[in-house]
Image (tube, rainbow over all chains, first blue to last red; front, side, top):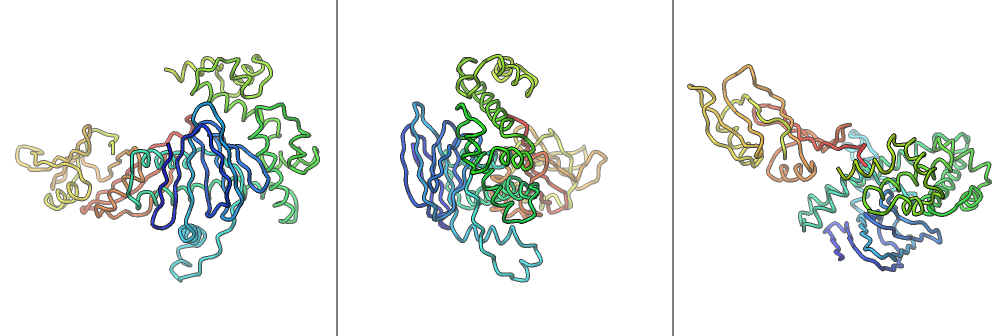
Amino acid sequence: MRYVKELSNRNKIISESTCEALYEQQNDAYTIKFVFNGTEDCEINKRKFSIYPDTFAVVNAGTNFSSKIDSISPVNTFSVSFGENFIKDFHHTFSNSNESLLAGKEAGETPPFIESLYPFSGDMRFNVLHLKNQLDKGLKDEMLINEYLYHCLLNYYKIYDKEVAQKLDKLSFIKTKTREEVLKRLTLAKEYISSNYNQNITLENIAEQACLSVNHLLRTFKEAYEISPYQFLVQLRLNRAKKLLQTTTYSLNEIVGLVGFECPSSFIRLFKHTFNITPLKYRKSRLN
Amino acid sequence: MNPSAKFFYVQVKQLNDADAFYANCLGMPTESTMISEQEKGIMVKADHETKIFLSEQKHQNQTNKIVLTSDDCLEDYCRLKSRGVIFKDRPAYLSEGLSIEFSDPSGNHFIILEQRNYNED
């Protein structure tokens, strides 16, 4: 199933549910890509990553982008592209105070987004789910769709502030350019962990992907995110295991294997330590 | 909209104006009722569970702040805006969720809140 909703202001939404797909194109507008179940494997400028339901990806206009879906069960993807004027107006309103808006200050250039994976949670998740539900039911009201899209951008700017601007401040380098470069590389590290969380990945692998030495990676990752890359990996595995417990009937042993843990007992211990409940009790509580 | 409380008693300046606002702008069914033996009022069915009793006279149990809950605040915002409701601001994010605010012609303060559980899996 696939539908495309193109609005008069050139905002565009594409929803698709498919087992197999292969796209390769130059992205023509700022786009935010979501996956509601399954995985979409993407490549941006020769950089590979996977979008899972707990993340979303941002792709700038003009970027060469390709994606691939190859799954037994249908993968539901949802992508939102913003018209140039819509995003410019939004950026202008968001960046300027009420006073300067009233004084008719010129809209500044919309900055390119850092193309990466961001956490799909909180208000962004609520608003996008509402939009998707409405469109699935056949919503045609452009005013309402644009309101959802406005809030989608608002939520993204807040996430960007938390995930990029605030992390930059945490890095201890004096030069802004150095901080930006290091954060960019840490973003690559996080992307690599998120996309390969179920593989047997090592610190050396992560450091290589991020073009950092192992020591540099460990120090700067902890500085920016307050946890080590390994702790980030374990958290990710536990959260994705939690989702599988909630949404599938896979056995515990299958889930342990699917999320990359080697032994069920250490998974159960870590799960209980993190969520204060055993995996099976958690699954039972969700069923009730 | 699913108002969180069952009954609200609200004082309005003029029943006719209030009736027009609640019925035409908010789209809520209204009907004449008796607030007491002597006093006429209007009952507003905010939804199948909640009723708002409007009267011109002052009573002790009245409130001027009505909180209605919503499944989708942005949908309610756009729907009511297109019906002519003037909001104080654009929808705003609170720690409990997303909300919008407006007043009725008598100055009673309405909050529509979409409660969001940010800790839910």
